[in-house]
Length: 114
Length: 113
Image (cartoon, rainbow over all chains, first blue to last red; front, side):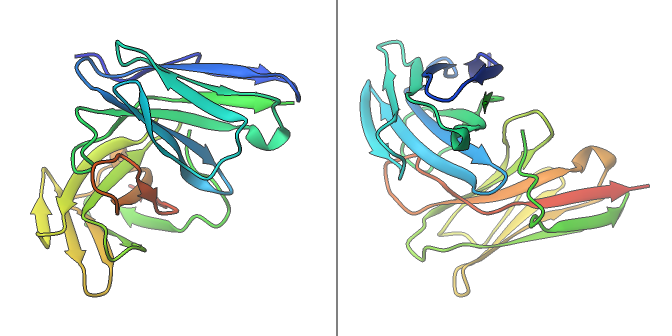
């Protein structure tokens, strides 16, 4: 079974631009969540999707958004990029999003904002 | 792909020794806990999990201990190998029916020969 796949692996953008990151969960997994990882703040929860609905959102500005498609694939979008958005963005999936089952992560998208 | 802040605590152990990585979690309502390993350039890799109705769980060369009284979690790695060198994160889930995890700051494990 293939793991969680994230594309692209690396991205370089400039301030003010927008970016879309993609995540394909493990086959059969219906819950997808996104995390931001930075050296200063560590791993922080962005949002979670289940059956195409956002079920939970972390403490991030409205410039961060996401969606989930009927095949459980998910995208996240960051608009009006700021230097502080430079980070590793990680996607994770679980079977049913019960909160007490294994959560599997992809390798992430490394975003650099110049 | 790892947390490399200067504040990251580091545990250095000799190959073959046992390692113990500690974590203090924040929410007494947390019901589910996970340990992850993150190597450079990779995402967090699941190691072992434990639910709040247990105080110990064993896997292959790893044991997780949970002390709910003091909100403390530990990961024990037996016979530590060079391949165990990575950053280790504990994570807690205080909310039912969601995958919203709260992660610890991480501990860097360095294994030397």
